[in-house]
Each structure stands twice: as C-alpha cells, then as structure tokens.
Length: 593
Ligand code: SF4
Image: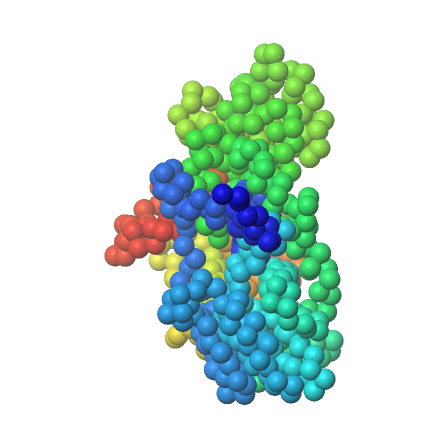
C-alpha cells in the first residue's frame, strides 16, 4: 500500500524546557542567584525527587505571607466583581472542564466581547510555548475591553500585598504579555497594545511628610486602581516603559543567548552561587547548606563576600580547608587586648605557598582581607575537628564600640539593649523590647536590671495600635532607666546612657516608627533626637551587636544571628519556662542543620 503524506507537517513536539513567570521573578528577588534558576529548571523538568533523594526538603513559604497575599487578593477581587462583569478561574473549574489551562476560554472571552464591552478575568491559567520554552502561569487579573471602534485592549495586572511595586513584579507581567500575545496570535484574535500593571497594597498610612512628587504619584495610582478595577484598596502602577521589561524577558529566558539557556547548559557545580541573607527566603536553602557542607565550599566562611569568594576561586582556592592551609599561625609573645592577656600571633605563608600568598595579597578585593579570611577558615576547620590552631578573635581590628565601665570610668553607666520588631505586611512595629542594665561602681548588680517587653494588642493594622505600643514602651523604658540608674559620684541623679541594638535594621525601624508618631506622642521626638544625636567624643551613643561580632569575633558558623551566637556561647534557649529552641526550631534555630 502506498503511504500517504500528511497534508501538513506534524505539529512540533512540545518543548521540554518548562518555566513559570514566578520562577523568574523569584530569581530576580534572590539577587539573580543562578543556582536557584538551575535548580528550579531541573525541578520543573524532573520534579522534586532529586531533593528527597538528597535527603532534604524544599523550604516552605511562610504562611503569614501567603495568607496576607490571599486576603488582599480577595478584597480586590470582590471590589472588581462589584463594578465589572468577571469570570473567575480556578483548579476546580479546570478539573471539571478537563483542561490544564484556560487559554481557550480566555480567547473566547476576548473574541465574544462586543464593542463597548468590558470583562475582567480573575486568575486565568495561561500556557504558551515561547522560543522553545513551555511557559505556564496564573495571571491575577486580565481586563479585556473592546472600544467603540472594535479594537481589543488588554490590561494585565499582578496583585501584590506589598508596600511598593518592584522590578520582579513588572517582569512577571511582562512574561504574561508575551504569553497572551502568543495565545491571541494562535487563535487569530486581533488586539491593540497590551498594558502592564501592578496593583499593590501600598505603604502604611504615615505621618512622615511625603515629598510633593511622591504624594502626587500615589494620588494618581490610587485613582488608576479605582478607574481600571473599581477598587479603593491599593495602588495601580501602570508600567510606563514596558519595552524595557519585554527586553528583559528575552535576555533572561526567550532570547537565543538568554541567562536561562546558559544556566541550563552549565554543569551544576560550575553554576556560581554564594550563601547570603537572601538564602533565608529560598526554596533550596536546605539543599545548598548540605551541599556546601559536603563540598567544604567557601560559602560557609562567615562574612565572606561574593566578590571575595570569586577572587579566591580565580586563584584556585575553592575549599575552606585549602584556604585554612594557605598560612600557618605562629605565636610571637603576648599582648593585652581590652584588659585581657592574649597570645600575640602572626600568620606566615605555609611552606611552598609563599608565591601564592603574595599573589593573593595583591589581588583585589580579597587581598586586603586575606589574613582575616585565613583566620576565619582556620577557626571553621577547627570547629569541624581538623587539627589546626585557630584564634577566637580577629586580631588587628582595634577596639569595639561597646562602652567601657569600671570604678573610675563611666561607673554608673546604663546600658539599654533595644529590640524592635517590624511587621513587613503592615509596615509598622509590633514588638518593642528593652533590657535596661544599670552599673554601680563599674559592676552590674542583678538588682539594677529590668526587662521591658511590649507586644501590640493584635496585628499592627492601624496607626493607633502602633501609637499605643510606642507610648507604653517608651514610658516603661524611661521608668526602668530611672529605677536602675545609680547616682553619680556627687550623688546627683545623672548617668550616661548607651543604647545597644542587635543591628542597624532594628534601629532604623524604631526611628521610622518614632517619626510616624512625632506629632502625637510626647517623647517620640525627644527619643528620636537622642538616638540620632552626634555621640560624645569618647564613645558612640549606640552600638550594633552584629557589627561588634563581625569586626571583633571569629565565630565559626556561617549564620551569625543573635540566636546562633547566643547558643554558641552557651546560652540555653530551652532553660526557662518556654522552650524557645523547640518552639521556634524551624527557621530560627535550624542554623546548624
Ligand atoms: S539557597 Fe541561596 S545559594 Fe542556594 S539556590 Fe537559594 S539563593 Fe541560591
């Protein structure tokens, strides 16, 4: 029998490479970590079995964040459906209709829209093949409008429960642009320009005087949200330079030399990565920690920057053990450091590595920190039970900023250790704490110690709640200072005060909180001025524990959070009535795996 050629060539097989717009926006959020992208593409193609096989689990997104996003989305969708004809898509509808995506109903809604008609599609799932990639994702809102001349206008918006629209949000809607254009082209639907937008919740109402330009911009965005979606909640940023973001889609994924194509073709261990604060919010946190430990990767060195890491790698040093062995530690007498007698030491190049040490010492940027990094590498390897000598401090770092107190110098110093916790969903403070410790004759007697901890009486979703928190905490902290302060040498009620913050972020959120209520809380301005005044000549007014630890201490663990450092120094978080370590095991106390 004669074979009959099909009248058309068979359809091209579906692309095997899969990606979602959220993968790319997450890649941007994670400081463009190429290892994240590599792992995500692998998971999209093969599933998450490789994580299980490696004995790790993906790190879940905090439920608070998901819940807040869902609540804002529901509020917006309710408002939209009160003003426009809407079609809501979801998993149940797709399952009932036995389809994987909503391409056809989206195309039908566009095709059937009469002149003058508007329909808003909520959560349609789009799937398109773009330049060899199968791209799939759920659009938050797709608004279709056909004008009186019959031209179809589409507006794609992403709903974000965030204080501002960000680059990754705009990039995400740019992907949907290309997907929708591809679907319309395939279905033969003519259309006008596709507008891109981000509908975000916006910042907390504040009393900080906003610049006139910023206020006007917010006013416009508030009106745009009302105009396009009928919602009084949130701000609508219409992306005014969509071409830049459409170009970024090509550079990152669909272009012939895109980042995603390059990353997927690179051997896994050759894809650059570095463990930093960003990894806290990454799915693959556990994977990367375990893999780094197994390969003795340089990322495990505390306070190593990505540039330092690259500099060392270029010089052929790829493991902590190799860096630790670059130099030997020699004792050369003793030195008095802050009242403590310490052995004086020096690092000398290990035999056979003199030229390499000289070369690295002259290499930017790692050269200027080379000895510090070798000290840190030695301490880490010693912690891992290698037989190497290591120091517990970083030599040649001078004195810290914590004030000195003894019988003659600042004998009645009051130290106030301040904690300020910020709710990023509402952009307000929800917890304030102060440990107030007074000195007498340079010593801190237990009787001159008070704890002040105040928690807002619910999520800080209103200015009044934050105001109550601040009033209560400021008053209690001032009372505690007055109670613990010992009189000065002349018996007067005068004592120097020093504030200690965990880090600069805690100070910043407290200052911003005070500024929000400067006009209403008596004492807010005074405290703000006190915290920001130029320090006295002999010591700064505030210290930051994270800087002290980074500059002065040679602790071996990569994550040097307050919880980790305290636990390392022997503080038992389970010792009190509440077993904090057990209670907050995930995320806060999982620093040693
Ligand atoms: S944990 Fe960090 S290094 Fe690893 S993939 Fe995620 S962001 Fe990249």
